[in-house]
Length: 273
Image (cartoon, rainbow, N blue to C red; front, side, top):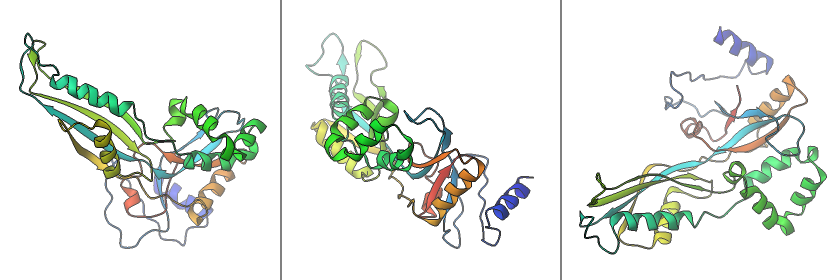
C-alpha cells in the first residue's frame, strides 16, 4: 500500500519519469547503502507545520530543514592523587573539573542571525509591522533583536553552537577523594563552526593543563542546501498545494535526522510527513 501511495504521489508531482530511491529502515538513524549516482535532492523526515510557534504570525508555517547542526561530546578529565576526605588538597579533582565546566558555561558561543534571518525573510510579509521594521533595520537594531531571541531557549538554540553540561562522575564514596573526575559537555554545532574549532575554543576557555579535553561522538554540521534549488521549490509548491493558507520557510535542524542521508546528496531537506 505504501508503494502504491508513493507511486501516485510521484505521478501527481510529475516525477514519475525520474529515478527515485526509497530508504525504508526499521530504525530512524541507519546509514543507507552507497548509491551509484548522486541524487539531485534527498528528502528525509523532520520539520513540521507549526502554529503559534513564530510570534505575531497568525497563519500556519511549514518549516523545511535546509541544514543540520553538528554533534559533539567533549569529555573533560582530571586526574589527581586521591586520598581521604579528612585530609583534602586545596583543590580536588572534582573542584578542578567543576571550575572548568563553569568557565565553559560562562562563555557561550557568539550568536549568528544567519538562519533565523532566512526563516524570517520567508514569512516577513505576513508578520506584524514591528517585526518587519526591526528586521529591515537589523544593521542598527541587531543587538536588541539578538537579545530578544536569546531570551528564549528555543530561538536561542537556532542562533549559536549550544553548550550543555550533561554528565559528571567522581568518587564512588562521599569520604574518598577521587583519583579521576570526568564530565561530558554536549555541543550542537552551528554551520560555520567545526568539531575541531569547538574543541580548541573550549581548551582556550578552560586554560588549565590539568584538564584533558577529548572529543567523542563527533560530527561536523551538514552542508547548507540552497533554497533557490529545484528541490526546495518543489517541496514548497507541494506543501502549498495541500493548503494554500500555509506559509513555507527554511530552518536549521537542531536534531540529527539528516546526518546519514546528507553524506549522499548535497541538496538534502527535511519536511514533515
